[in-house]
Amino acid sequence: MNTPYPPSLTIVSPPLNLDIVSQNTTAFPINAFPSLLKNVIESLHTDTQIPIELISQVVLAAASLACQSIINVQPHYSQTPEPCSLYFLTLAEPGEGKTTINKYIMKPFYEFSAMLKEEYIQKCDDYDQSLTIWKLEKQVFEANLKQAIKKGYSGELQREQLTHHLEKKPKKPPFYQFIYEDVTNKALIEGLRKNPEAGIISDEAIIFFNGYLKKHLGILNKAWDGEVYTFNRANEETFDIQPCLTLSLMTQPNVFTEYLKKHISIAKGSGFLSRFLFTSISTNQGKRFYSPDNTLSERTLTALNEFYEKITSLLNQKKEISQNGQPNKETIKLNDEAINTWAQTKNQMEKYRDKNQEWSHISDIISKSGSNTIRLAAIFKKFSNNTTDNYLNSDDINNAYKIIYWNSLQASELFFPFSEVHSKIRDARELFVWIKHRYSNNNSPFLKNDILKYGPRKFRKIEYLDYILNIIINQTNIRIIRSEYGGALYITILSQDGHFVLPKIQYFTPYNMLPINTNIQFPPIDFSDL
Image 1: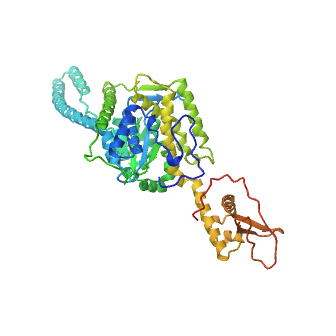
Image 2: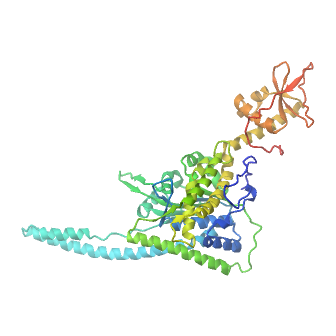
C-alpha cells in the first residue's frame, strides 16, 4: 500500500516458525498452502504475472465457497459447530488482473451454476406439463363431487378423491442460485430462503460499496456467524433462515477509502469489517513480462484441471446432499496438539491488540483471527491429500495461521490512517511545523500561550496541547523553558551543541529547560521532511 506503516508499530514476530519478516519485505506465505492450491497459484502467477497475493485471495474464496456446503468446523471452545466460510476483501488498482483471475478460478462454479440453470429449466418444463395434467384431473374430481351432491349422495368418496388429488399438486422446482454479484438485500434474502448457502463474488465491488446491501449488514454478520436470521415482511409474514455465505469483494483502493470515510463507524462498529481477511495489492505493472504466444503453460493447465476436478467433486457433493435432503455436514474438529498450537497463536495475537500495542487499532479484526484460523485450517484439510482425517493437527493450524497473520498485517496497514494513533501523529507533525514557522519569524522563543491563542484550533485546549507537545519534545529539539524566578513558559529550539536562544527581554534573566516527561509512550514520528 502507499501509506507507510507507522515506524513505531514494529511488526511482531509470530510465535511459530513462520516465513514472515518485516512489513515492507513481508514474504507472502505461499508454502502454507496445500500443494493442490499452491500449484495453481504459483503457475498462474508465472504465466500471467498477476500478483500472487491477488491470485491467492481468489483461490481461497473459491475453496471456501466449495467447502461451506459440506463441512463445518467444531472449535474446542464451543459446543456449536461453525461454518467454514470466509470473507475476503482485496484492494487492487485497475489492470492488476482482478477480472482475469476471477474467470480462471471461478470457472467450475459458473459452469456448475449454468448446469443447475439448465436442470431448472427442464424441471420447469416437466412441472408445467404435470401441472396441466393435474388441473385437468382436478376438474374431473370436482365435477364428480358436484354430480354426487346434485344426486343427493353424501359425496364422501368423491371428497376423499379430490382431497387426495389436491395433496398431490405438483410443486414448482426451486431455483438454487448460489453465486451473487449485484444483489439487493431483498433479493438476497429471497434467494437464501431457497438456498441458504451461497457466495457474493464480485471483481468490481464498487457495486457493493455503492449499492443497497451495504446498508443491511445484519444478515451478512449472521451468515458469517452461522446464526439464524429472522426476516419480517411488510405483510407481517415472518420466516427464519440460517444463511452461510462466502464473500469475495475486489475493488479499487480509492473506492474502499471513500466507503470508509462515510461508513467506517457503522462498518467497524457493527463488526462487519472485523470478519474479513484483507489484502492490498502492490502493483507490478510495468515489470511484467509475457510469453510471445500469451497462452497458459502445460504446468498451469495441469494445475488448473486438478483444481477444477477437486472443486467439481465438492460441488457435486453439495448437490447430492441437497437432492437427498441430508442437511448434516461433515464436522472437522481439533486434536489436542492442534488445540495447543491454536492457543499459542491466539495468545500471541491477543498481546498485540492491547491499548498502545501494534494492532490496537485493529483489535476488532484480531478478535476474529482465532475463528478464521480454524476455518481456514478446515478448508486446507479438505484440499490436502489426506481427506479422510476429520481432525486438525498442529501443522494444519500453523499453516492457516501463517495466512491469517499475513492478512492481519495487511489490515493493520490499511486501517492505520483511520486510527487514533495516526491522527495524533498527523497533529504532532502539524504543530511541529507551526512551531518552527513561529520561531523563525523572529528567530527567538515565543510564549507557549501563543499556541493557545493563535495556533490551530485543535491545539487550543491545554490538555491536548500538552499531550502533543510532550510527544514533540520527546522526539525533536523543541523545548520549553522558564525563568529561574518562575513566570511564563516559552517555546524554544535546542541547538546541536545543547544551547538554546533566550527570549528577547530587556534585562538578562537566567532560564532553564523544563524536564522532559519520559512517561509519554508514543510511536516514533518522522519529522525529518518538515
